[in-house]
Length: 249
Length: 316
Image 1 (tube, each protein chain N blue to C red):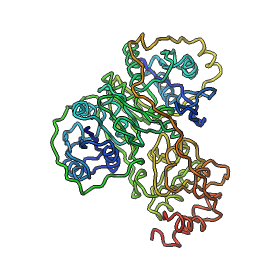
Image 2: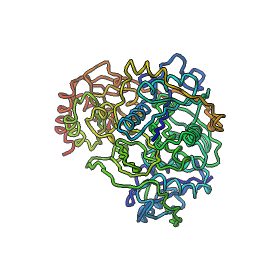
Image 3: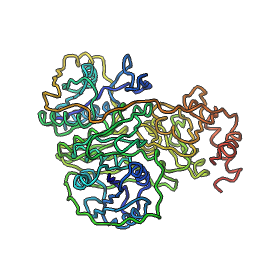
Image 4: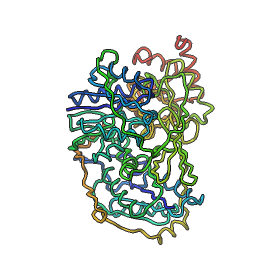
């Protein structure tokens, strides 16, 4: 069984995003970029399926500029077997990404596709669900537990009030939540090995997908700032302020 | 214009998140209808019909909608979407699961987590953990939208006079099966609708120390939350998580205890009316957004806070 893992190159988790002066987007020149944190969890889960003998091959996919190959190399260094890069300069929206991934799924015929529940740049939380719809597969989103036995997938989803357990049959789309696993670090020998692993390249045109965005971004601005308030010295003073100044208790 | 709101409910109660989505729908204009899809949920449809501003409530009552599974819900939405210009759902785990699936089937690019309606085609949504606000315009024939509930007031209930009409079910997609739920049971208010929230971070050091802040919560009738760091460390379950990848809250009062104030946490609480930070590290970024900061050891300050509230008669 093959597992496909889409990985997105995004602004690093620890970098604060700055809005461009011309309000067209976020400043990404000379900013540290990394693999989307939820996608690291996806890669880890795919590797665990392979190590458990459930999956034979783990294929990492990334869509975007040439530098996305660095993100694919990160997945390969963690242990993925090979990569696919769909070269596209410019913005991509979840619907176009889902269409590209559908085309790849039809070529590669994976039984499981594991995606991060959301990317920390556009915060959309859409691609996995959209891909499931386009392929006509079942979906288990925001999962914190996964078991695959034969054709049966049992998953625990993180929902607003707690946890929800569902069962599905392969093939399936999974999207990962934080507590599913703790992603491994790539070891130095594995980083060296990753350099020799193959990465195939396509364009959206090769896959007959129009990647043009549907939404027009009119402007991107900074949210109104919050002024730092005052320091209080004691708990008594705090309660007094909350009660008599802010009047919130 | 015709707006459809997908109601979130548990087959007996309409969830408050729906009421915030209704307000966003009313801001778009035109007629507003509610879709209640569930099983044995006629009572929910009655509640929905009493929401101010609601015209018709469409009720799809069938076993395949009992647990809100996305595969079945999306099929139903595709069946009805052509009658509307906008389909909205709250940006809860339910809305986030269902709406993109329907959007892809309708070949429309969903607009996630809107915080403002500019006009019928144009919406504001936070991106990059709320560090930027994007204004986006859609030309899709049917717009699928999820709504950030904290950005819109709850619509009033009780005064509406909508009518309920039955809707044919779209059948079971047969792709997933609901097995069961383990829902957190708590006497405290729900995080996203609580008037006061008190959250603990890595500074709590262990889940065993959370009763310290729970005691304060009970004095103030507050909900208890946590930072991602506290969830990652296993102190509390994930449904406590406030932040970019957890819940977004905007209470009257937010008390952050032992939380440093990482970007991802601020994304989930910085629209709170009044923010209090208790942290022993005076350099912690949380103090930059706090209205009232107390630099102190939380293991001393939090019990003191509880005692002070007791002394002043809170929660008695």
